[in-house]
Amino acid sequence: MTLELTRAETDELQGALGSYLSELRMEIADTDSYDYRQGLKARRTVLSGVLARLDGSGEGQRSQ
Image (cartoon, rainbow, N blue to C red; front, side):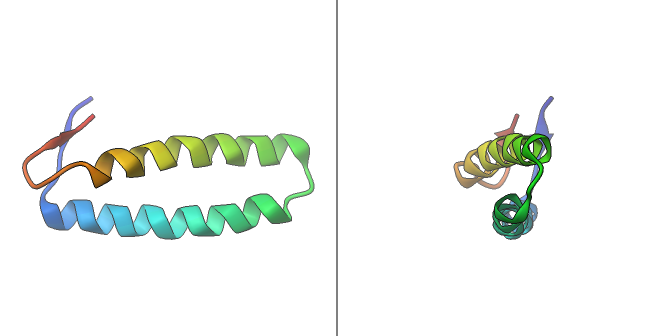
């Protein structure tokens, strides 16, 4: 899938993902259920990868 974002859209998405990942770290630390914690960690891995790819994109560039 290819998604084209403007610089403003990229900045907003980076901010939203960064904020969510910060909250997700706290939720992982507070979770007692092993299975749920593993699911949260998998989500964190995927979203951290998306954020890293966004960090390297500029206006008009594509993020896949």
